[in-house]
Image (tube, rainbow, N blue to C red; front, side, top):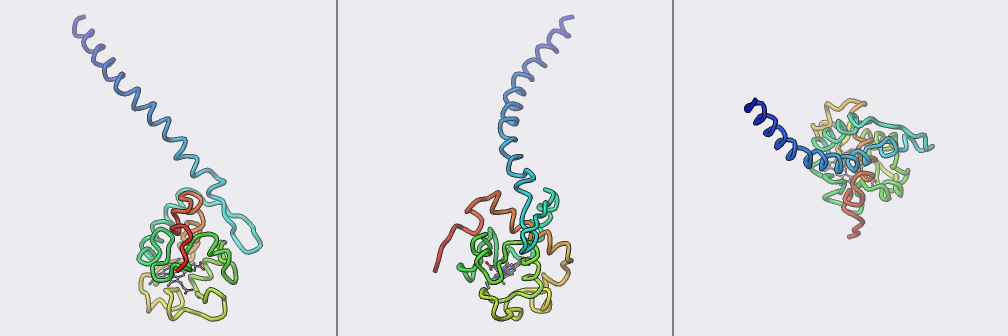
Length: 170
Ligand code: HEC
C-alpha cells in the first residue's frame, strides 16, 4: 500500500511538471500552425493569377532545394551581389514580365532574363540552360523548380520583410 502511495505521489509530481510544459506547447503551437494555413500556402500560379496551393511538405522540400542550389547568393531572399534585384514580392512583381508567380519563376530558372526582360542573362545567372556554368542546377527536376518557386513565394508570407531583408536600394 505504502509503495503504491509513493508511486502515486511521484506520478503526481511528474504531472505537476508536465502540465505547465504542455500548456506552454499548446500556447505556442497555434501561432506556428497559423503561419502554415492554406491561405499562407496559396500563391499565384501563373501571370493570369490562377492560384496554386502547396502542401507544407512541398514548401519544406522547396526550401531545402533552394538553400542548397540558390542559398549562396539568395539566402533569406536577398541577392548578395545585386541588392536591387532581391526575391521579395515587390521586386518580383515589378520585373518585366512580373515574376511574382510560380510559372514566371520557373521560366526564370530555365532561362533568366534581365530585370527589364530585354535580354537573356543565362550566361551570368545559374540556370537549367547553362547547367555547365553552375553544376548545382544540373540535376534539378521540373518538380524541384516548381517547389522552389513555391517556397520563394510562401517565404515572405511567413517571414514578412525579413525575407529579402526589407527594401534597401544601393
Ligand atoms: C551565383 C549567384 C547566384 C545564384 C547561385 C543564384 N542566383 Fe538568382 N540572381 C543572382 C543575381 C546576381 C541576380 C540579379 C540578376 C540581374 O541583374 O537581373 C539574381 C536574380 C534572380 C531572380 C530575379 C529576381 C527579381 O526580383 O526579378 C530570381 C527569381 C532568381 N535570381 C532566382 C534564383 C534561383 C531560384 C536560384 C537557384 C536555383 C538562383 N537564383 C541562384 C545571383 C544568383
